[in-house]
Amino acid sequence: MRALVAAVAALAAHPLHTTLTELRYQDGDRVVEVTVRAFADDVRAAVGRELTDSTAFGYLRRTFTLSDRAGRPLGVAWCGLRRSDDVVWLCLRAAAPDGTSGLRIRAGLLFDLYHDQINIVQVTARGRRVVLLFTRDEAPKPLP
Image 1 (tube, rainbow, N blue to C red):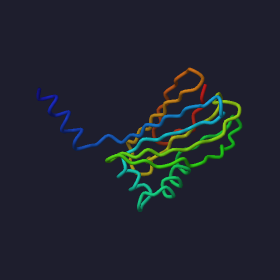
Image 2: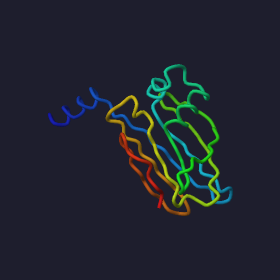
Image 3: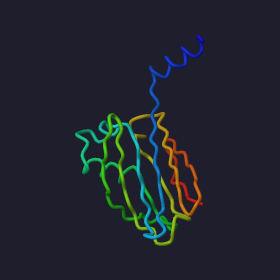
């Protein structure tokens, strides 16, 4: 019991710094939709001012990248910011006419704030699900 209390106290003293991103490929539209779930106060601290669609989109464009097999960035469009209590969902869309195979992803959100930041990306495309884990200073990762 003491070990459990100590573990809970340690977590309370040192919060977990993480984001969860879901990337889904829509075959019919040949579009990748990206939804990032993060704690609102973390994203607000990262943008350095009020969290708006504009500031969130700017931050996401700098810290989350999608590129093709040749390393060229995909053009992304903003599809919104949604809030619920202390969590925000940030949404991007990008055309991916050749599907997701070979796309390269970098999820560098909040690495500028937290040395222990971990970003999880769940990719769902053509009936397959792949999970990628990003830590500080990692290069973009290709999708299989």
